[in-house]
Every structure is written in C-alpha cells, then in structure tokens.
Length: 238
Image 1 (cartoon, one colour):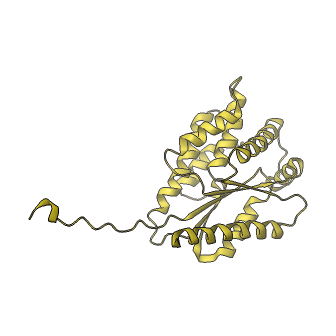
Image 2 (cartoon, helix red, strand yellow):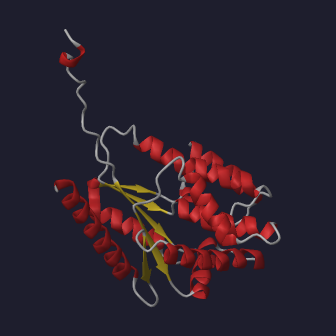
Image 3 (tube, helix red, strand yellow):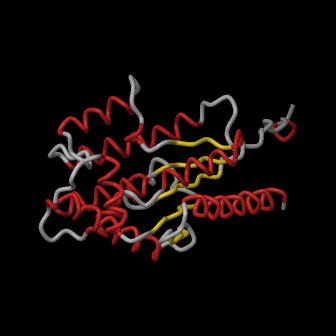
C-alpha cells in the first residue's frame, strides 16, 4: 500500500470549553451573593467555584489557605508576598486542571474571585513593599505570568460600589476593625480593578451596585451571562 493510500487518523472533535465567568470586586461589594445567586439560577449546567478563602477542610486549597492565614492577616500576608502570589496562582491553575478530569464538563463556570483578584490584591501588597514599583505594572505582570498556564476568564464581571460602604460591610462581616494598611490594600485594589476594566473592555463588564438590592444586581449579572451563553451557542452553530 502506498503512503498516499494510508487513511488519515480519525480526529475526534475537541470538547467545547465551558464559558468561564469571573465575578470580581473589592471586599464587601456583594460579589459572593451575586455569584451564588447566578449559579443557583443556571442550575446543573453551571459549576460554581467558591472564593479560595472560603474553602476549608482537609483539601489542598484548604491547607494552603490555612498556611497563609496562620498570621491571622486579613489579606493572607505572611511576610513573603512573592511566595504568597505564586501559591495563590498555583491554586487557580489547579482549578482548570481539575475541571479537565470531570466526567461531565459544565456549560458555564462561575468563579467567585479569579486570577484578576490575585493580580490586583497581590500587586497592592507587593508594590507596598517595593519602593517605586508601579502597582498596575505588577498586576499586569501577574496576569501575564498566569496566562502561560491557564486562559484568562472569557468574561469578568466587576461589581462596584462606594468604597467606604464596602469596607464597612467587610469589617462587619469579619467582625474586626481594619488596620490602616488593610484599608490601603482595598483602596489600591479598587484603583487597579478600574484600570484593568478600562484596559480590557472586551473582557470586563462593570456593574454599579450602589444603592441597589442584591437581588437586582444578581438579576443583571444573570442576564449578562445568559446573553453570553446564547452568543456562544450561536457561534458554535455557525
């Protein structure tokens, strides 16, 4: 049989990758409420990834977060910000790797805080320890680093509100008074989120939650994701 007559190997179509949506925002803005309401609305077609700091128990993420929280710092500062950043990014890469081995892939992944959170908050922490460092450059470098190992979210929903209101909510929720250096991290994170959203309008959608009930915010986020799902289905059918 000639080489030209050898049939080409059969290639199975690659499975469709889930639509990956990250819900972001500073502490106290209501992102967890919106993410959970959205996941409940989407039902079985959706996989909700809780915020890393909400994962406890004897799991790898739980053990890593427990180690980072050993100093009882609000933002998991242990004095080694580069190591902290790499550990958090590794957990975010692991989420994608574990998704690949699920027996049935979800249609949509809703992520309560994604790699943007790691980039923004760790940039705020790192730049505070390095005189002259530009927090925006650090955040972009963190995102560029993790993008070698996993794709960035298809869509990032950034919830915004008055920073002082959000900070009060956050402090009440954790039952402690925030130190000045904690407030500075939140302020810098707010600035960095705004800059990322302006630089990547195709990926970011900003939703102002000021004075709005949580149900209304969740409905708007849900409508946005439903539109993304429909557009994705139309693109696949074309």
